[in-house]
Length: 422
Image 1 (tube, one colour):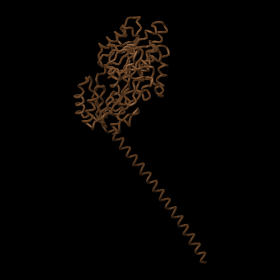
Image 2 (image 1 turned 90 degrees about the vertical axis):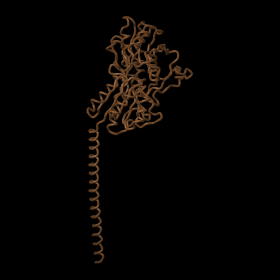
Image 3 (image 1 turned 60 degrees about the vertical axis):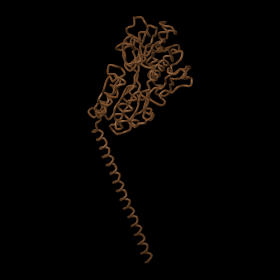
Image 4 (image 1 turned 180 degrees about the vertical axis):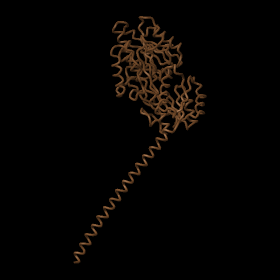
């Protein structure tokens, strides 16, 4: 009887333990379900508040331009500005200041600061020093400086940023198109290999300019190895009359390809006004010149500023770090990118003037850039710094452009194949 009682008690206890475990299991499940539900609700509410905050937040963005919509360089920035206005509407108030001469930018930057700007874009190389001084003085405002390379120099400022597209890629690709045309002219007997001459109208002997025309020449020489180049500096970014005259002079010297790193349609007009029968073709920069020079324009390239500028606005609206919000090659507070992120674009190809197969060849070159397979600054060349002839560089060892900054750094004039004309 005792054994039976003990067995029954033991069985009852075991059943109670099992029942207790089941109850605890059910309580635990209820607790977990409740916890998960709470977390989902919290996440939903937080996200709703976050996005509601973004939609309600308004900022003021300032732009300082060295030119206006009539100049190719500034026109590209204005395209990005208008894209921002279209996307954000009243959420982003825009203040744009045009035709701000280098050296006078301080008073205009102060105007934007006084107007309550949260983000200011400055767009000409020589604005860099003053823009950084303003960033140091006003740490609550984000300053984004195009084409400059001083973001990672002392003093390092969280609110000062630099950016630029890897335009040497576009220059090289445009050079390939020009080389295709030269090759066609040679094949047809219009010119000889010894007459494969390029004329280049350049603004200043800065690294940005030297890097660009070097990449362009190397693109041409990848197709026509005999090609050489003559460069003339205007010492101004925007001077229609001088640009046109220098292009005309280069044409008179026998140049059959004209290109430029300057801001006006002067070179295009010079090409189009050349006497019928004179072989000359134009490769533009920043803006298509097909309307200006329909019978001589070939192609061109430009920087697409929209990915960076749109990304910077979005970052400020959402209280995020700019360099963590934009795709590209990041070096500290500097970002750059090329064809792979659509920061560099080719302008339309003029099918009337371009050599057969040019479009396909250009696409092939662009794919190589996108895949990181094209090494532009390499070859049997020696370059010299124009400010220090003893500073030379042998391109047999290769040179990686934009390795440390988005702004170009290659500043060596290639001996024997590039001539600087005073």
